[in-house]
Length: 69
Image 1: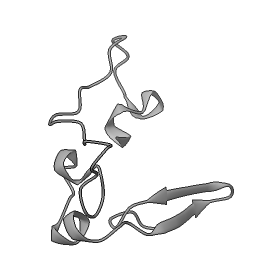
Image 2: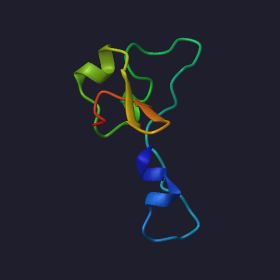
Image 3: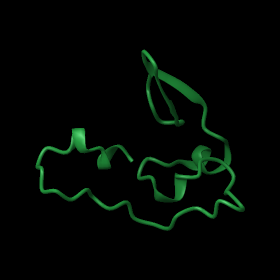
Image 4: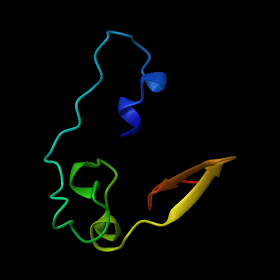
């Protein structure tokens, strides 16, 4: 998801990068993180455990096993 943040993209082409994979079924969410099937950083922990809420700055948080505070 961070790769699609316009503020992080160096070359402004007017197009955002696509995120591969399929969207999760919101009527039957997978165990663990809903983004695990589409995340290049996903590990077994991501696929089985819900991600923790991590404070990453004043008024900012992320739900991710891989993010560092």
